Length: 316
Ligand code: ATP
Ligand code: MG
Image 1 (tube, protein in one colour):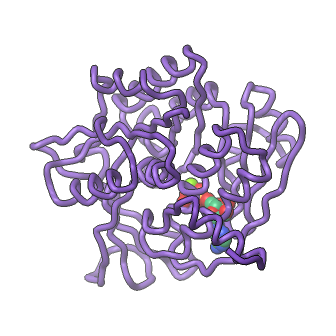
Image 2 (image 1 turned 90 degrees about the vertical axis):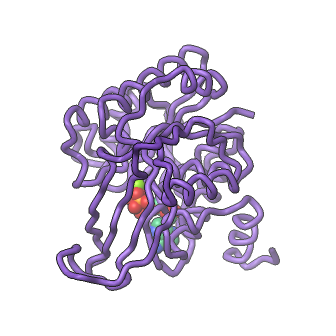
């Protein structure tokens, strides 16, 4: 079975319990929850029983322990997470606005995962893996971009594959070098997982069809466009497959895209048909939004089977 690797931020998330705009007054908060887009992704991969690992850094503090404990418990190889005794684990404060959009205060670039150098230990882990997943949000510092690019070349040179979720946040889009790094990763991508408008960030096109055609022409094998509650659409050179969303009460959408991507990539790597991979990925995304906390809604295979059966009106 292929081992899946990701490289990027590990954070705790602290959530405002009341909706509103930002953090300029004293408000009630709940957390810390284990978080960071690549961490949420790899935790979901681990829950499905697929071999997997993350390269990152945490401080020697409780926020680091919250993440290490959860990732270990869910089956993720944490040997690539450096524990920096001088560092502090990253954090994100998130508050939902009345319209459902989110305001974030991030501490990533100055945290323990602010630099992720390509050490001998990272090289060892990369050699064990045959698939790399990249989150656009992880391209926040030159050392991380360098490690991601080196991992991509090593994995591709031995016939492995790369998936890429732009996962863009306005708060981090203007990190120096980020746009160039996003394009460089896209050029090596096999499975592209944009959400909504992100499809148009890398293709100058007037329609979805045109954007998909242009992206496939660059060498991307598979595009899966996430559409929130509507589900997702799969595209490849042979055509497209619709994956309708499942009914779910949305409590907290953070992490849905990461869980969706993890489940899609895991099923795809194991040879599932697009319609099957989409079903499991949509179920994974739907279950993720039903729980407060970004990683709290991660699912096992049995939970996804039961959820799909229940929604389709069969006995689980
Ligand atoms: P994120 O905010 O985690 O980055 P995203 O923008 O990448 O999310 P979305 O399209 O919002 O991705 O959600 C990913 C998947 O999760 C959807 O394709 C769908 O399968 C599922 N999903 C999201 N929201 C809902 C919902 N309200 N009801 C049911 N399923 C949902
Ligand atoms: Mg996303």
